Length: 328
Ligand code: ACO
Image (cartoon, rainbow, N blue to C red; front, side, top):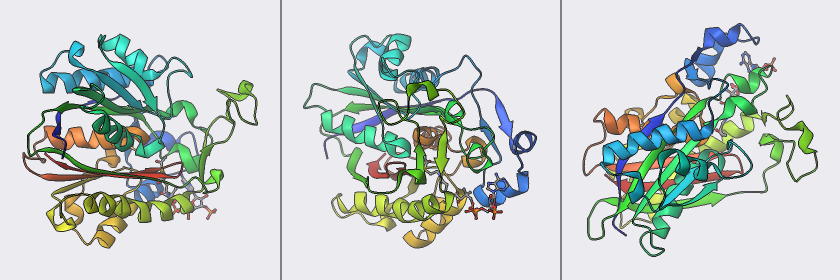
């Protein structure tokens, strides 16, 4: 192991809560359908003036406070997002400006719902060899801006907000990131999970911001993929450790897409559901945001204790999936 440890976590969420009952007023759905099919009860949705860089900056401030560091100590900012504020500059640069991390290199990373784990892996790889001692890795979204609010297949699932982790190179310690495992399959048909109008692609930029510029999803195909990918990400990352097995894992922090996907993964991994951190009932699917939000929640409420083995597992559009094993 490289001796890179998470020394602080944080989340940044919109304050506006939208319940299933609220959604039933705008599309043909019910609280009962959403709860039984997904587990989601409510989610946070941005106000018009709020953006991904706002949630990112708030999450970063909270993580820095926990870590007890100042912004000038950060050498690298990675924002994993599929809903950047703008095409350019990167959201990471906007966050740098907002928090005053003037010494940081900054870039965005797009791996959809696997983005935070991808980001953690990239930061881990850059530490310390590329001069990075302290990295800020963020997963954050404003998915409400890329939803068709007349499409009940998607608008009940996705939400806004993000989380952050501060990673520090401590060298000769026995805690920190033990392994990362990154996978992708670009051969899946895009309609499974995509925003169809492109930017430099087939469709003109004028569609940006229109109802067509929205996430479309083949729910059943994505469901089947998630049920396979979540356990594979955990097993794949475990295989890259020095002999840890699923029995050694204290907590699994999965991408929060659907409680039924997590239940199926618990069965196939043969571990109790109680070892999963699940909070999608409160926050819905914030794509790149779900894993760092859940990590921060379980870190702050004391569920994750020093020395625990924590497995992160992300899966999403691309298709992409990714796992990480951490000794806390
Ligand atoms: N309210 C009421 N009915 C609905 C709604 C809704 N919000 N959405 C769909 N339905 C209807 C469908 O139209 C369908 O009706 P029909 O039979 O008359 O055509 C019916 O409900 C059943 O649809 P199914 O597709 O069978 O429902 P399913 O049990 O598969 O649940 C769901 C749908 C929740 C989307 C599920 O497939 C799922 O969770 N898939 C994975 C989604 C996911 O994880 N996405 C994100 C992962 S990647 C990422 O995060 C970027």
